[in-house]
Image (cartoon, rainbow, N blue to C red; front, top):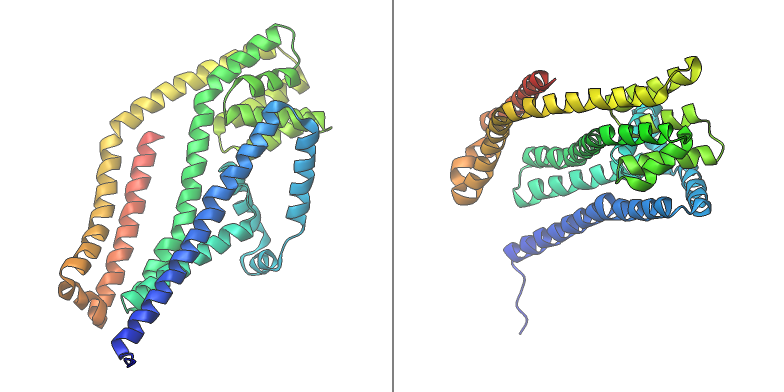
Length: 332
């Protein structure tokens, strides 16, 4: 005898299905945003270090063709967001070593927003909380993008003094600037070795030295690198001893990094306090929702509670922004 499905069983099946869809979308987003770009980047770096110029040229041609064939999604985003914002996003992704087109990045943002909205609307049964949760998950890719840019910049700047000294020794030994860049690309690790190797390969393909260095400064968000590029460009126009100039740049960068590390150690307590002050209210809210949900239902089920919830989230965001600005101003 077959049993009839109750209303509770029906809603349980619906919620289970929507949760499965949300988890699938999240898995797809993680694969497209984290696993696939890093795999492609490792393959490109391996070919660069092995010196397969023909293979690198083919990869560059395929990359340009794929960027030229912009799909309907990227064209639609260009219309609504503007071409300048898409170009800025593409530059930021390049600075973070995320070799995807901006359309794929924004599609992942949309996936995460849908996942958060489904969880908040169907599991927690509140559309406002779904919008807040969707917006929070949608911000995660941008935070990851900013973190990746900072990590790459920090690694690059730490390697800069050694690279400048190696460049100066190469020039004193009689190497030209392109061959010195090739030596740095072969001897030093990622990211500075990879970026210098790409600059050398671009010169081998016919791009001038100033233009290849400017391309490198676009791929790395580093003020020290811009000083290096500006010094090389001025030296090529006016002349002078480039080896001594590189040694001076290395000394200045190393002194600045030492001073910056002391400042960061002094402001570590402030950064930790700011992080705890931001995370504790959010974690406490969700823990209360799980343990004693009737206490938190007032914030979700009533209009005054939802207003207080929105105001609280806005105050947390404003407070985190002000704390970050204060800490950054002290570090600078």
